[in-house]
Image 1 (cartoon, rainbow, N blue to C red):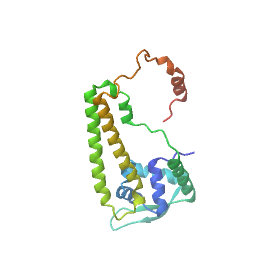
Image 2: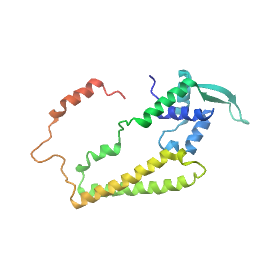
Image 3: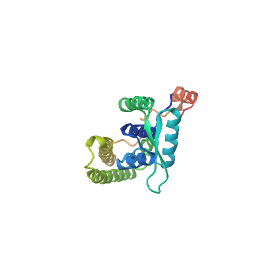
Image 4: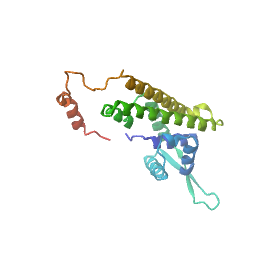
Length: 210
């Protein structure tokens, strides 16, 4: 079954509202701040639209022209496209997926820094996150014409920023006070690579499909 990525989901979802041309889809995504969590480029947009049309999930309905602007093809979702959209939407809402975070990767080696630097960097991250929260609170205040439900994903991201800022500040405090130990392995229990042999073999066998 064809995997529906974030851009394809956005295209299908917006075409479910009413028929649009690709530029209108991109403009709507920007207006609703969807480009904050879905990478947006017109090149990718046209590629996804072409792919969805070949799959039979969207179809052209008309070709429109405004003034001297180039002709624009308007698309609508097909019943098959709507079915795939709703199925993928249900999966995304109900099923947690493993996400790879660069921040979490960095935390894995936090102990390689000095206590002082690690704490300072965490406080720097917390300050940056709080600045983002303040900025986005201001941006969201400008969207009073939209109902809360239209910006529910932005609300969740704001809550995550606040949580992570508070968490980083708390961990920085534990590092500075000495509450958080600064050694990864317990005394008398050296790290042994052999303990992960089975897991590593499993990864190699799967080929880590991306």
